[in-house]
Length: 160
Image 1 (cartoon, rainbow, N blue to C red):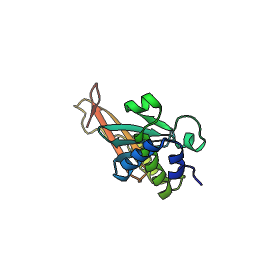
Image 2 (spheres, helix red, strand yellow):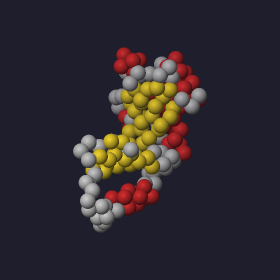
Image 3 (cartoon, rainbow, N blue to C red):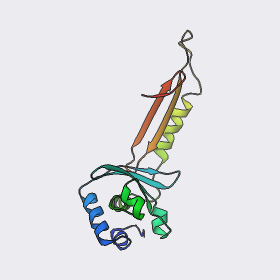
Image 4 (cartoon, one colour):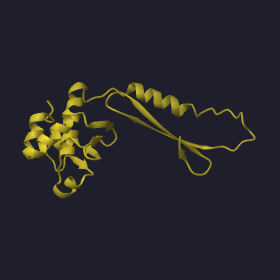
């Protein structure tokens, strides 16, 4: 059973910080939650007075090993914890209850393989044109959605 749950989160933060983080979580201020499979890190944005980027490290939390994550807010830099990190931890804990720890990546892997293999047999239909550089980045989130960022250009790459 995961140690990342509301009671354990509450026990590891000062009471007022937990209450404020819980208020952000309850008001659905945690958005853009993504799981980085390669680094085993969850990323999110927490909207308060401003929007802050938060990283949650579940392994560090479960092993009570150092920092549980990161937030770009001034409070985190001053104290090493903040209400935004609490809100992010609560959101990740909630999502981990809904999904297994072994997320199903087969569908996204098939999709990515299809994208990569589509470049194996290029057809030259524009011989009098200049070739462009193309780069795409795929991200997978905990809700089984794939986000694709496309960049193209002759010399410099521009986001499309």
